Length: 93
Image (cartoon, rainbow, N blue to C red; front, side):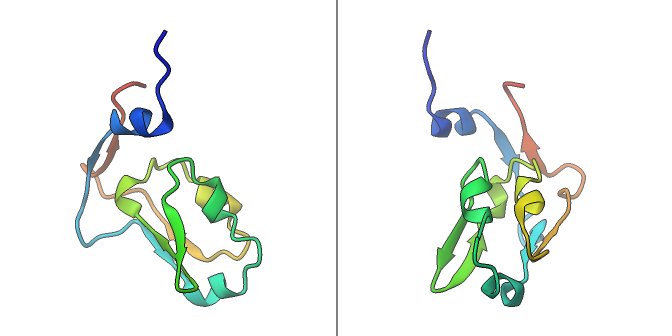
């Protein structure tokens, strides 16, 4: 049995990206008051990062699981599913 790495598994998916229309927006003012920054650790695709004191997200690779929204204690995320025809296309279930 071949075991795939997380990167290999994620590479099996296809993403239709609606350029210029992010489905995740971050309220940086609320993020600055957050000590836990759970989004940095909870996203299964590891899309969140902190750069120069601000949280950023590479929303184009989002798995649309909503984990980040569930763990954000400051209600700093504005999250919606991508517009119809865009987003993730799972190829392996």
